[in-house]
Amino acid sequence: MKESQQATDLELDIQAIFEHTYDVIFVADAKGNTIRVSNASQKIWGYTPEQLIGRNVYDLEGEGVFRPSVVRLVIEKEEKVTSMQVTSTGRRLIIIGVPIFDDHHAMVRIVNIARDITEVSNLQNELSEAKQLMNDYKYELQLARRNQGIEQWIVARSKSMKAVLNLTKRASLSHSPVLISGESGTGKSVLSSYIHEIRTSTKDHIHVFPCYRLSVSELRYVVQKRQEASSSETILLENIDHATAEEQEEILHLLDEIRHQSKHSNHHAPSIISTTKMDLRALVLEGTFNEQLYQRVSIIHISVPPLRDRKEDIPPLIQQFLVQFNEQYADTKRIGPKMIQELMHHSWPGNVEELENAIEKFVVLTEEDVIDTNQLSMVFSMETNEEPVYVKKLTTLKEALESMEKQLLHMAKLEYPSTVQMAQALGIHQSNVSRKRVKYNL
Image 1 (cartoon, rainbow, N blue to C red):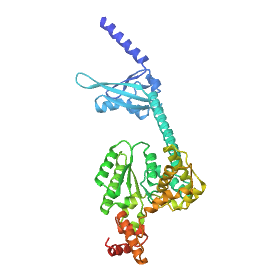
Image 2 (image 1 turned 90 degrees about the vertical axis):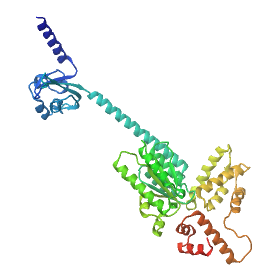
Image 3 (image 1 turned 90 degrees about the horizontal axis):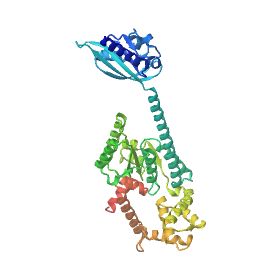
Image 4 (image 1 turned 60 degrees about the vertical axis):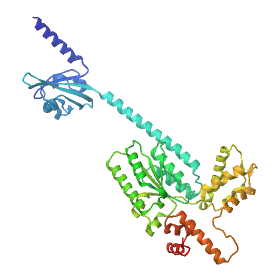
């Protein structure tokens, strides 16, 4: 009598659980036939227990009531199974299926407990979307701020520099290799830094490798370390035209490896930016620069014009540097309009960098509040005294020209490693450079 009462009480407890639990409790036999289901099935699956009891899980799965059938998975694997399930009503469930064995190790029942996690999944999706939206807004804000920054510090009043600025902005939004060419002092490093900051969205330093003293092993080490890092960074190959033929081959192989790994792995490939003072295409035609390497590094080519070809930019550059150095030296110097006109007529062989140095000298050395044409000599007389080519004494014109020619060749030899580059800098043919080097024993 006591055992009968205990059995009755147990059945009442089980019945209460099946009627009031928020989870779906699903019991099937070893063939997948449904024996018992909790009332939550109507909310979760859209079917009452009466509509499911007696049905086989293979048929229910085929009809799309739920997918996959965890009972089926337990029968097939004969072990406990945990799985995600999507119902015909669009609910997402996490289900634990447990096999029940008799004393002879034969499977007799499968008990599933399914918990509805739809709301949790929705919240996670909404959170992910919100995070993505915040990241998008953050990036757009960074982009707007940096665009403002580059337009403040890269003066682009001239048509040619406006084109350079627009191309630089477009290049910074891609990950393609960029080649920046231009004479010394034209601002190649500023453009490189801007592209780096926009592409990486980090405060990490750009990794600069001067190619006139390139360590390929160090370059390879840095590239490998950056590929293992969680963020993309930038490799700047500075003056790539100075790389030897052997170094060009090694750089090419390294770039090929980067491209291959970026296609076949989840690692972040470093961004590649190269700079040059020479016309790389001309060097390729002369046979002194690797054509494949040229094609790799110049997917996007930004050519920065010299300052003498964009004189419209000189007045705003003067004002920019004047503000900069007045702040630096706690001064209030001004530049007169005639002085600006004189500075616009200067050829500026050192480009923007030379102009910047000149304005700093004016601010530091001028005693008056206004910098005018009277102060020109304090800057350009110093430069004149440093002229690299000069005649020491009265001599014949032929001897003077030969002396000047020898000095120019010597300067070009110190600056450039190949006769092709020397010829391009001097404006003569490479064969003439070779003959004159023999003539002057250089």
